Amino acid sequence: MTKPMPHPTLATFAGAALFLFATGMAQPAHADAPDSLEALGEALFFDTALSLNRTQSCATCHDPEKGFVDPRAFDAASAGSLGDDGVSIGDRNAPSAGYAMFSPGFHFSEKTGRWTGGQFHDGRENDLAGQAGGPPLNPGEMAMPSKSAVVARLRANPDYVSAFDTLFAPGVLDQPDAGYAAMTDSIAAYERSPEFAPFDSKYDRFLRGDYTMTPQEELGRVLFFSQQFTNCALCHQLSPSAIDPAETFSNYEFHNIGVPVNTALRAANGVGADFVDTGLLLNPAIDDPAQAGKFKVPTLRNIAVTGPYMHNGVFEDLRTVVLFYDKYNSRSAARQINPETGESWGAPEVDGTLSLTELQEGPALDDARIDALVAFLKTLTDARYEHLLE
Picture 1 (cartoon, rainbow, N blue to C red):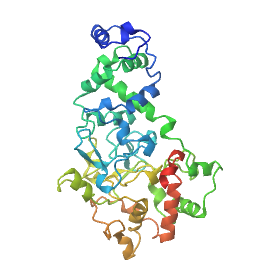
Picture 2: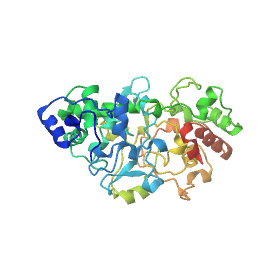
Picture 3: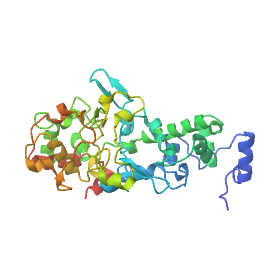
Picture 4: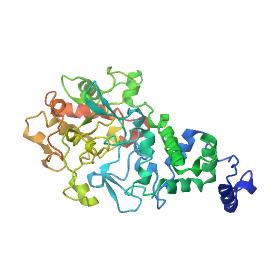
């Protein structure tokens, strides 16, 4: 039996609800309806009804308990997220939704001469709302056939109807484009909440004087921010100050760092051997071949608990990532070997556009300094995820 509502003659029974939708009569307020844009966005973020087979929500690939990444992508072979159809596997690693609110809109920076910002690995959506609107309509993800189909799912929920009418405009869900935009705006509002960016890691507590770095962590911190000893801060520092409490550890530029093909993922998802992921060049706004192979610099917030790594999830371990960068500056034969495979790192998927100026900045690092950098990166883990470090 349907749970009784304050006005059962108007909102309890499906027949009555359909009558109201058909006649355009105003819906009464529902006691359980989300009462703020953020609360509505949260409900939508976890709602599997937004996928064709009702098996997936935003949280499926951006799990709040796992650093807002896909917890199913536990290794390089499973880096691409499984779609709602149970068959489709994406060719890119789901980026974390944590701290995504700080990425600026996609634009060309006259100051740096680089494309910057946006959402997704290639910046193809300008903001959070645009990003939220992508997966529901992607055939390989949530697979809904149209905006109209998504909005019809929203209209089937009386609490949603009440919330959208109150927070946007009466009847907004009667208009597919407007209703869909209202949905994405709501999800974006939730993603701008402090839950997604608490700034409460050991590093943040260190800045506030509430945590003392271990000697190894402190060495890693000094190395990270010193361009004399590493190239990390060239791309993974936003603020001019190394002690800015709002540092997101990304300048949001696009670079080609020579990431090799994830052959295990390609074998799993069936993408043809001839396919080349050209990164930024696949952004509809970009037609310059010089941008091929470039991907947006990710935040390093929660990086230690959000593997696998790189845009295609080709590396499983964070230390491997640091070693990969070091290969550009080290003459050691050992540094030219991927420790996860015991073989050479592999050729860049896209060659010829590598950011060699940045990659070759700084000296080679010994194992102690590699380990120190990894130790520092672990201090960027939000307090709620620190248990995942083990």
